[in-house]
Length: 212
Image: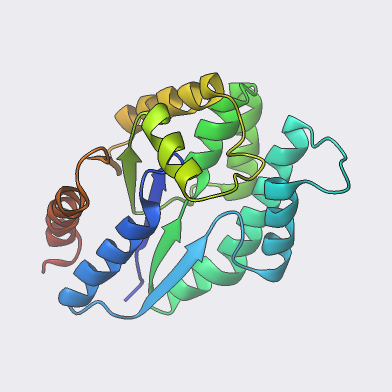
């Protein structure tokens, strides 16, 4: 049986790591235990090298918005072709910490890159490949950034301005309304409540997908 791909999305501080652990626990409870975990950008040696440049820069050289976008897609296709697709074909279920929705929100919304250019690039690189289910953890930018800053030093992306993250947030919401495979989770609630939301969404989805 071909596996399924579940992506976890959201702003900084939304609680993606906790959500990933929750999804894994629920899948395990339903006898789905052969799991592959990925993160973006990253997940292969080349993709991790690109992640470091995207997150931290290199030798104080300014990274242009389009170069950042192209690096993200280079890292993504390395991960898809070398890790995600082989795992799915082997029957594993993949749980991804971010995927292309992040790029559409951060580079399309936050960076305000041209939508036509971004869509053309996406189609050329990814084709029709996408997660079977995306859980978008929705949190207002102010709360998310406060949580992120409480964790310690911020990377290059996390240091962007509040208006940047407000644009990212707005694009996330716009895209979630347009795609029925994206389910919105209210990440402002308590950890237990967020876990309950994820469990309900996931069980409903699993019932339709694999007849649990």
